[in-house]
Structure formats: structure tokens, C-alpha cells
Length: 113
Image (cartoon, rainbow, N blue to C red):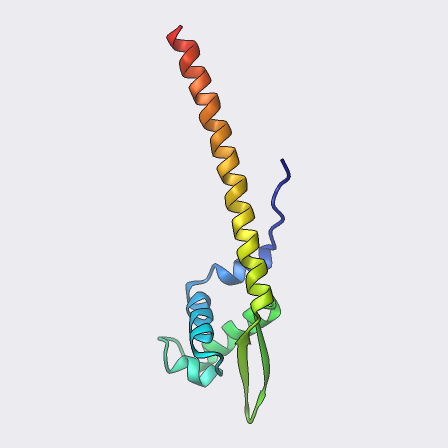
């Protein structure tokens, strides 16, 4: 069985609850700026801008100039890649857990005979 390839930077970015909330908002709203996002969150505009920089660096969002700000949208291809990675990691762990279960059952059966 092959080990799932995981992009640690991508998952580190997604691992933060504030950034996940921002992704949700950007998906729901179809995009947004640091200012529009900060009005819907409990963090400052500056904090939102820093989180957007992290998301942009790993490719989950793409920013384009919009007046004095940048308007961000989710990069759906990169998000799909993240979902595929998560599914692969989940499948790998399911297989590991099944092997552990079979080993435990074999040990139990040996003890019962």
C-alpha cells in the first residue's frame, strides 16, 4: 500500500480555525477583501490580511487588486486537491486500522484456543 502524499504547508494553513472560517466565508460570498471579511469575524482587518497571506501562499486563495485593497477568491482546484489529500489520508488510516483490528482478533483467537 502506498502512503498518501500530504502537503504539510497546505494542511498547516487549513488547520487554523480562523482560516477555515475565512474559506467558508469566501466560498459563501464568492470572494471578499480583508475589510469585508473582518466585519464578519472576531479578528481585526490586519489579522485577516495576515491569514489571507498564508492562504494565498499555499494557493487556497488568489488575490487581485480591487481599488486600494485586494479581492480574494478561493482557488477551487487547490481546494479540490486538499479534499483529495484528506480522502487519501483517511483511506490510508482506515486500512491501518483494519490491519490493527485483524492483528488484535488473531491475538484474541490465539488466546482463546
